[in-house]
Length: 638
Image (cartoon, rainbow, N blue to C red; front, side):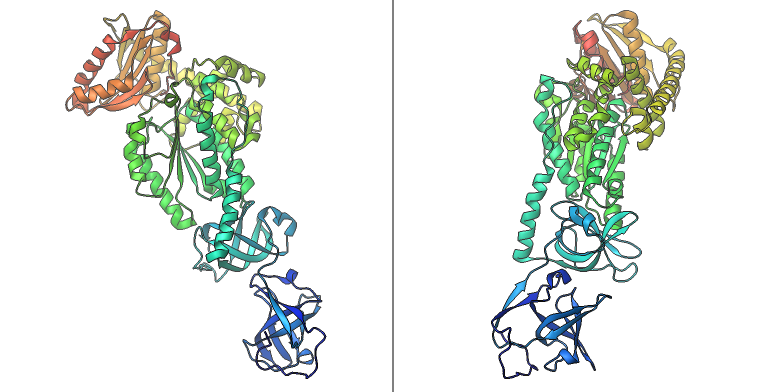
């Protein structure tokens, strides 16, 4: 190759003949330029005292007339060497004419990785990665870019509020250069150039990023808090979910966490929320990332209601439009395993919203199959509800971010006591909590306080408040204890007031199988719109009757179009009963489910008596099992 037109041949061989001339790629910075090397320059301006040239998009300078051999126009190319870097950063070059040389392309500077940016503050760096979010602000456009090691916000400015680099979209593989700065105490790259890669260049970067993503998504190998053979069956499923959640964070997809609004649901969701927030904060340079990428949302119903899914979809679509986010992954906790969830799931199927379920309610696996991508449930491994969702999610949280362990050692015991688990490992979980300073009364009070708090929070997650009640990510143990004491005492007072009003209205019937049946109209004979709610009220009445009789007991709390069911010492299969009622009570509009011996059903108001009569007949035919009087006791809040 020879210099472009306009160069004058001096007629003598230059001392650099036979040398290498470097052609810098657009993203190369001054770090790629050395004083003793030759470079291909492109004229970007002509003035009386010389020409301005570009070696790359980042490297420009002046060839003074005194250092210029030929005459050139804008766009012409010729060879230069570095003359001087002035104190103000301006560069000067000298033209060099060669008769014989080879051109070698410099693709880029050595790339800087996100985890190296702390040491590059104020420097011009080059990054390669994939775009995981594009957010237009009132000023710059913020591209969240993920490389092998993390995610960093990259601010590109065109005009105030105007989209910079409009051709660059989510999931594009990009190469950028810019200066590392801080904004609001966090690192940010001020973009000088940003290019979407394609072809082999994009493929090479994508392969590298995929390999790094797969490695970074791998869950941590942690020993379970207690040894429990029944729990070991779930380990691989939980590990799969941990990998999926870590990968979701790394890919920049938000997570929308839905959980049952009771003690076990909070014991499941709060540790997992804490672990995911820590992992997000570790991965992203943006301090707002945990808030944008993770939402925890309580669900009052023991299934995913159409009201909830409609609200979730609306928020997700708005966030995609306003904040340039991907649609979220839906994480269902202590909820989501039954046919009642499927209408909401089918609604989500119209969008790119993957669903992951971790639950211990009796599932309808055939109903949810094909609608959920991961489903962890002890029933799928011939176990049952005694492995609570809180127990599972504490281990899941530790697989995602092991450093949460010291914050959550007591939580499985709270979950087990809240859900009346009689699993073989409960003494071990309680002993673990004892080591943290909690006796069984303390654990029971925490469960009551959680139920009480979430009742009044309604649809609000109450993150900081609930964290303090459960003592996860709480920095004040004394405040935690005072809160629990206050809330548990208020809960006990409100329960006593409710039962004082209700107990005289409880109806008794002796069933043919020897069980006691207790019924109460919770709509007409209990305080409404206050704590405890109908389900918990029914559970408290049931507990009192079990304690009074010591015999097999079934309790039904019913309203105009619903019934809440509890059983001790009777082999019920409530999900199966619901299926039978749907077939047998024509026009009953029956739906529902739950655990084997605790659950709820719905029906149309005008068919209440027929549905309840048919239900009682099934209960009278159920087998009595004395062993189940204690082992089948279940949470009164469901």
